[in-house]
Length: 225
Image 1 (spheres, rainbow, N blue to C red):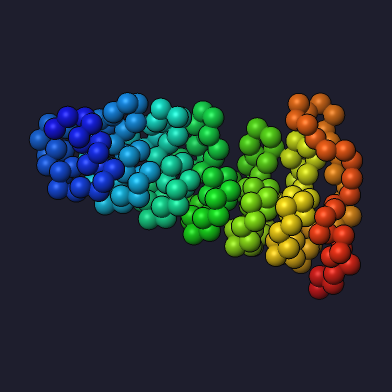
Image 2: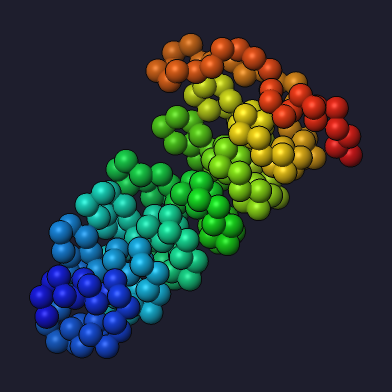
């Protein structure tokens, strides 16, 4: 079987074809156009194929043509069963392939709560930052994923961390109008008086100094218990 055909079989979940190829001459680390068989299975959510490839010795930490690991693809596309499989096989939880976010950041930014929970239970660094100093909590708050925010708060994340523009998770929730997340943060004790100050040496076009604003103005006096 040609590399392209085997790649397509993995992407489509054709277990019989993949198994037959592996039982003959094919390597579990075959790649096509810079992408491995395991990457194809993980991106498309083919858990059975991914398990078969891992049993046959597929590399866990290889990167595809865009610099993503299999775990990063599974987290990004919301394939919970594959994430669990990869973690059990020993995939690096903090992998930061070139130009890509860590797995926890990807899951948080896309709202995949079940995957976030798996990564937290596996010990993923909940305070890790991207190049702009965004934490997983920043991303979940900005994108409006309340269930993810709740998981992160329950895990004890720092509610007051600032990104390179001086924004806390509360600032981002306010600016994006995510009222449910705002309530979660306030109930968890987030500082509603903290001002957003731009970092002078940051290359980012930060906003002018201002207090937590937007919908926070009408909620700042909430009783948070």
